[in-house]
Amino acid sequence: MKRYGEYAKLGLVLAVAVFLVPTPGLAGETKGTIKIATQSPLSGEQSAPGEGIKLGTQLAIEQLKGPIEKLGFKVEMVPFDDQAKPDVGVSNAKNIITDKDIMAVIGHWNSGVAIPSSEVYKEAMLVEISPANTNPMVTDRNLPNVNRVCGRDDVQGAVGAEFAKSLKIKTAYVIHDKTTYGQSVAEFFRDNSKKLGIDVLGFEGTEEKSNFDPILTPAKAKNPDLIYPGQKIRIPLD
Image 1: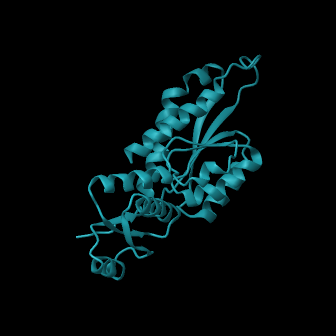
Image 2: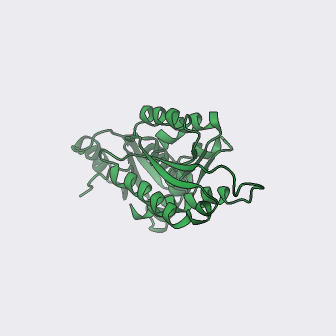
Image 3: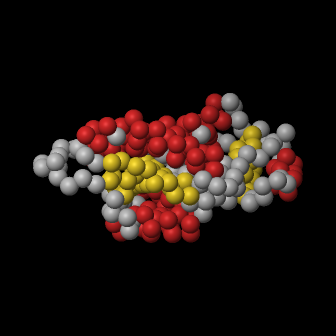
């Protein structure tokens, strides 16, 4: 949670920097409120990192709002709970763009939520800065309003494969949780492992969250040197 809170702070630094660009005649004019929205899961099993994004943003606002307030503007945070669900994120995004006081969005936690939600932000050219979304498609669409401050799946999966190779791993079995993140990073690990000469014995996904025997039994039967889990929900491998 701390790591993504720090990324949220970094994202907000970039957002606030935009507001601090000198604007002729800004000081002394009609005052108002500048709002920074967050979108992350604040309820459910993924609420811990979601709270980290929200709290990191709140801390950054407290630390960085001084120069803006000196210009006569109030700065406040507006948190939205996307519940780690794409439809909820999109619905929140539609509400966000109707509030003309919201100048930027810090979020999301899930790439699967961020990608469709960012299509809504694009309609209003609302700045989105992601502290956590790793899927390459988040930025490969080249939307001018979408930014991120974290690494990508194609880097994470490749580095994982290189690390496995450094351990002299010869065979691997890849599993994932069928989420946008989990499957993406697993695919990049699989593809890069093959390029490095590691024999990938299997590639399987599951949405199961408690009984992992159906996916682990065939994996163990292949007796791989390594089982690589591409997922946010950790599967016990003992």
